[in-house]
Length: 95
Image 1 (cartoon, rainbow, N blue to C red):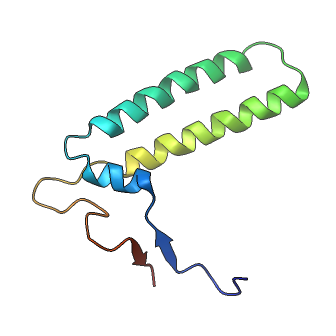
Image 2 (cartoon, one colour):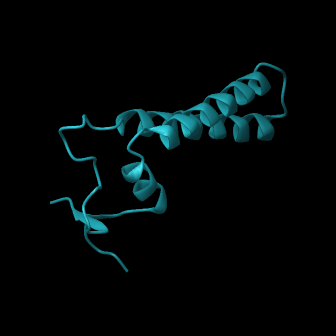
């Protein structure tokens, strides 16, 4: 059981894939997929829905928007800088 604050981030397969994606094609494809999903969910929310379906759709839309924000924050580094997570270690110390 964890008793203190979380002080480590473990690299996921997605983190590794994005770090290795020098040309940004994976990131662009993920953003495109998320934009399509966002449009679909917004379309669903535009029509009357039962409360539970509305709440589930709204939660999905919030998750999609959060994922888009993360991908925008993880934009590729300029060629002169190493990409985030490009090191050998699979975990990083935060503090």
